[in-house]
Image 1 (cartoon, protein in one colour):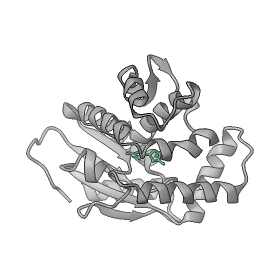
Image 2 (image 1 turned 60 degrees about the vertical axis):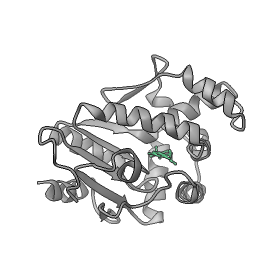
Image 3 (image 1 turned 180 degrees about the vertical axis):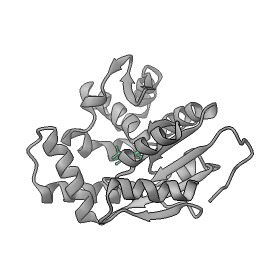
Image 4 (image 1 turned 30 degrees about the vertical axis):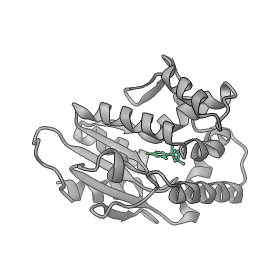
Length: 222
Ligand code: DC
């Protein structure tokens, strides 16, 4: 579990797992409790997907994508996402982005750029970062690694509730099918697929409250 404690002043926590497992909610709480910078890497893939959809960018043209990345600025400020200096946090969790983001996240030039940005952010500060490849690729020497999961039914229900609160009229079974499709794409892609790192602690959150999961993770850290 403790794969790197060379720098005692700086710690990094990697949280990976499938969609709807509760990673971001839990990571935010731990960040607050431990005074760490929280980095939602899924939001970064969502931000670039937002721009690709908005600007009708051709995903099959690598040169266009490289040019797009060169002219794209993604910043995380106090948990908010800024795309080219505009706040877009509220525009990232829509059914349309849910549908496309895993396809965008499969593309190597996009992953390379996002990983570079994520490693840069983590370089000089203590972070908790959530995503799919944090323990395996982005922070292979993270101080602590967790892999958070839950049953597909519970994950679908959580995402469904989240979308309802935002006013999106969705069908629960459709949400479940979309999550299953995304998990399959994320798990089966060639470059840094969703995978539990061998040193990560597995946490199944099925039937547990947010507080119970947070306490469980904090008990491993303390
Ligand atoms: O965590 P999320 O649902 O917001 O992530 C959105 C998508 O981004 C997810 O389906 C896969 C991709 N992703 C990724 O490939 N690697 C990460 N580190 C984070 C997210």
